[in-house]
Length: 155
Image: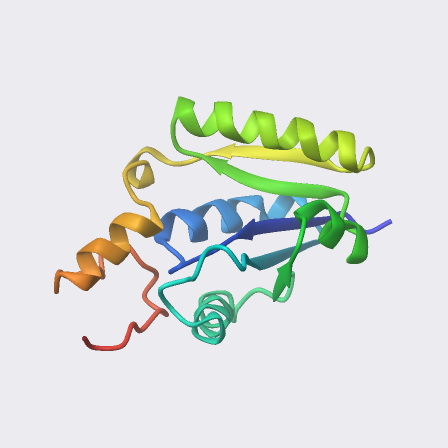
């Protein structure tokens, strides 16, 4: 049986922290699907097509990584792609509290799923997509926070 994990998120945009979690998880799984979740109630800042392209570029060297988008419940998507694991990164204790609750609900909805948490490396703890977007929108240099393969458009 293939050990397949889904790493869901908005990746608006993908950060060095996301990249680090995914690369560190590679030895644990046969395949990781980086899944860009589409939420009709939450409009992304960057186009979904751009986000998918950036993620594919970041992991062009990794045959074990697939990049897709999905809508609806993450557990339904996991069931559809026959994933047994949901991969999540934890930056802070607040992340843990939130992710634990979501993981427990997912387990109730789909008993075959396991949520796996990896702790963020200290140098990436302060980085999240919201901060990157804010720096970007205000003309700041985001190159410290996003993977080299991500080329954001000029404002």
